Image (cartoon, rainbow, N blue to C red; front, side):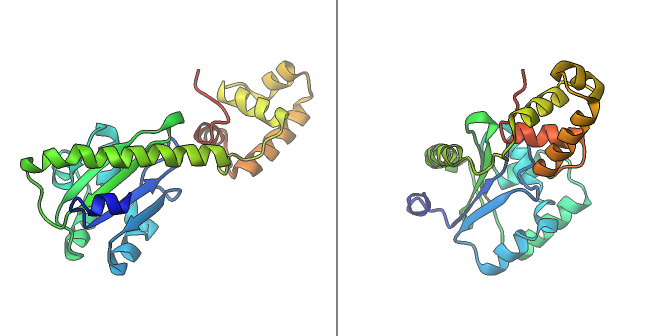
Length: 218
């Protein structure tokens, strides 16, 4: 993908791979980049700095490609956002194009292209084909991830059932009746479930379950 885009005038690019339902600047985001100087890469990949980037989640919410200038102008920025933009300017950022990339099972990602110049309305003709290339590559990456199953925590059948009923708002006593087991056994399954999902509460368990397609919204 990088070679195709570089041939079209892109100077640098980045691609965020994030579990479904998470922010595109969360600590669970993996950022792949090409063409950026090491100083920019090391600065941006600091989790405390990346999470103040106001552009990725705004672009995902809007649902279509925007220039960086548009993304900044279209939202109310807080002090952390302004600090990010100031530092980005110091690092030499000018303008570029950002776009949401949509995949199966809500595996959507954020993609950004740096042209090392300010963008104008005349650039719209080149944006759609470039985003199309990125979208095609993203779907191939999603297919590889789905085949590998690397994101799926190994849950037993009973743990999967408990997670399902947690997502439906059932109490431990409710689940004991539904599953025909003791409440103490339900408590034990929940502790094991939380440990495997690396969470400490029910809401987080449901979020991780949705992110890994262990449960589905009905």
